[in-house]
Amino acid sequence: QVQLVESGGDSVQAGGSLRLVCAAFGYSYTPSCMAWFRQAPGKEREGVASADVGTVTNYAPSVKGRFTISRDNAKNTLYLQMNSLKPEDTAIYYCAAEYRSGACYPPDGPRVADFRTWGQGTQVTVSS
Image 1 (tube, helix red, strand yellow):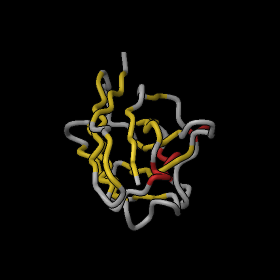
Image 2 (cartoon, helix red, strand yellow):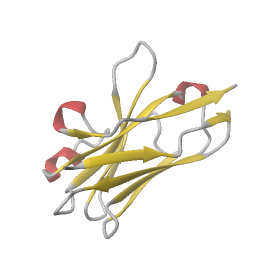
Image 3 (cartoon, rainbow, N blue to C red):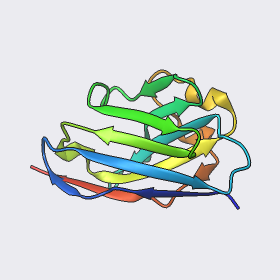
Image 4 (cartoon, rainbow, N blue to C red):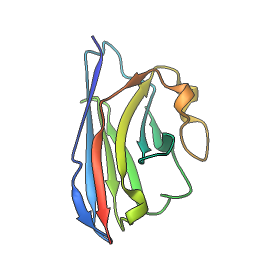
């Protein structure tokens, strides 16, 4: 059974940094696209960043230049380095994976409807 497990969420002050980790278990292949999403209280889930199995990455405009997505395909692990955090980054962050590489194509970040496998989420809280 495929499972995605996120870790690394925490409470930090504005301007701080965090690194989120998503470990994928149960895959017999390397997912073509892996991504991070987030959902703030009272808001819809939104795409943050995506990374394909090669070198292509895409980011939401709100995080571009501050967040960096990367993946270790040998370990089926996805990372999100978040720098210069702002209070508006406060949300539950979710990892997602999809075998179709097209899920990574949107240049302004991944779309919820393109992903079928999700983790349980990890809370990130940024205080001012």
